[in-house]
Each structure stands twice: as structure tokens, then as C-alpha cells.
Length: 392
Image 1 (cartoon, rainbow, N blue to C red):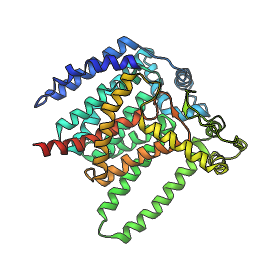
Image 2: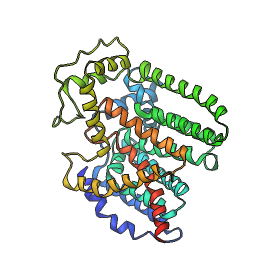
Image 3: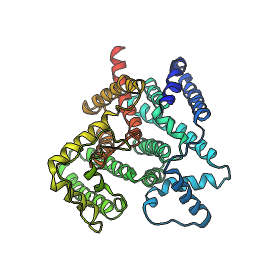
Image 4: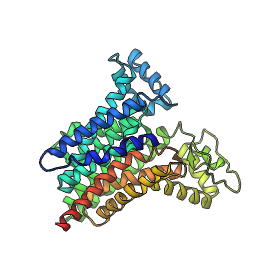
């Protein structure tokens, strides 16, 4: 991953020189995307990780027998369907990586269109797209046979389909994109919830002068949505995840043993027959102060992004590039430069991810936080365009 930083950051200066008036910046983005993907493929080729084998096996079952085996892998059925469709061409895993790269390029277009729509500035939109293309932690995943690349792309497709609405995306296509995103990996369920929140906020803003009809409409929908989320998590999504098993060993970052916070007394883990949400609440109730401590640390590590085992270059890039974008995105969010429905959408996606990590664990290579960075880039572009107009 650190080699990816050296490859991509070294070429950033040359790419930025393409930014000019008219359509030049669009051609620069296309050429930049092509060059970056070429460099990454030449260096990394097809990367097979621990989880890749089960995705490939599940995709093979789908393609050859039409069989969808129940169990844990069904939570990744969207990605496995994508893998099956690509491998059916007979081109093998190199075609899968190239398909992920192509979708990542289309996702950059979706990001650009969304940022331009929200910021009203082609320069700010181009800046957001360059951040997406040049940040190696994002493009790096295109070479992996893992869910990350496809999920990142469809997170951006879903945002564009929701925010741009009927002006660019037919309603049926938007619903299909948002629904498919939920099937790529288990945490994908936050995207339909965010889209639903966006719709509620749009309706609420249109009924601003009529509070009673708004309340009558909103309260039942919110209650039904909360119940549906709880039911889905408790009866399906969390059934195959041993999320309570991490508390006895004090794990903070999955895959890295360099930092643990052990409880004073080992918690008593309820039997596996107990529903997962109740099992988690039982463990939390035994030692709420310990839970608050580890949950806070995990949330801070998740949002902070930098890690002690990253290279100095990697952490310096995060501090110098990502943290200022956090600041710009936060200003756009809290100062109302983003419309309320957009704030609801982004806020739900971000907060639900923070909550999930706080309840479970951060991943050693930031696989949970990386898909959120493009949303930060979009929000930051709005504040950047506002700041640019003030300077002029």
C-alpha cells in the first residue's frame, strides 16, 4: 500500500498541470484515470486475498449451477453476482480487475457530476474527482478481488442517483442502484437507509409550512424504518457475525495485535442461540464503562484514519491532505451550505459507519473507512467553491 502512495503521489504534480478552462479538465481527468490504472495494474496485477477464494467459489456456484448457498457468503451476494457475470466471459480474474477499474472511472464521473451539482463549480468538482483518482488508498483496491472497489463505486453511483434525481437518473434505475449497493457487503444496508432519509428530508422541506401533516407523515415512517432496521440486523445480517467474541480479547483493530484494551473481568458471552442484538446488549450491560471506553477509542481510530503502523509518508499524507478536507466538509455540513436532504444522506452514512465500527472493530487497512472518503471529497468541494468565490 505504501508503494501505491509513492507511485500515485509522485505523478500528482504532472496531472494537476492539465487543469485549465473549458473542457480541458475533463480530458485531464480521463487521461489521469487511464495513467493511474495502468501504473497500478503494471505494479500489482491481480491481487488475491484471504476472502477472495470464497467470493470466487460462491460466484462459480452461481454461474455454473445457479446455486445461492445460504449462510455468511450470502451477505456478499451482490459482489459475487458481479464476479460471476465477469468470469462468465471466460477472460478470468484479469478481466475482473479491469472491470473494477472501469467502474471506478465511471464512479469518478458520478462524483464529478454530484460535486458540480452541489457546489456549482467545475473547478471544485474537478478537485474532488482528482482527490478520488490520486488518493492511492482508494484506487489501490481496484486490483483486489474483494468487495471494496465495487462498493466504493456503487456508493458514488448511489449518491449521484439520489442527489441528482430525475434530472439525470430515471427513478427505477436509482432504486436499482441503491438496492444493489446494499447487497455488495453487509454494511451496504446503510445506503438505502440514507436514501430513505434523503427522501424524508425532501418531503419535510416541501411541507415546511405545514408541521402537522409533516409530523403525521414522518413519525410512522421513522418508527417503521427503525423497526425494519432492527429486525433486519437481528434476524439476518448479524446472524453469522460473532461480534461479541471481540470483547474478551480486547481487540481494537482487527488484524493488528499491537493495541488491545482488556476488560477487568472477562465478560460472560450469552449462548449463540440468543439473538445477536440481545447478545450484544447483554455484553455491554455487564460493563458499560468498558464498552464506552473501547467504543470511543475505535470510533476515534476510525475517523482519525492515520495508524501507528502506516509509513511516515502515508500518515503525513493523511494529515496534510485528508484532515484539511475533513475540515472543509465539516464547515459545509454545519454552516448549511449543503441542503438539508444532502446533509441527512451524508450524515446517516457516516454516523452509521462510525456506530458499526464502535460496536465491532476498526480494520487494520482501513477497509471500512475508505469508502467514506469520496463522500468527504464531495462535501469539501462545496466549501472549497464557496471559499474560491469569496477570494474572487
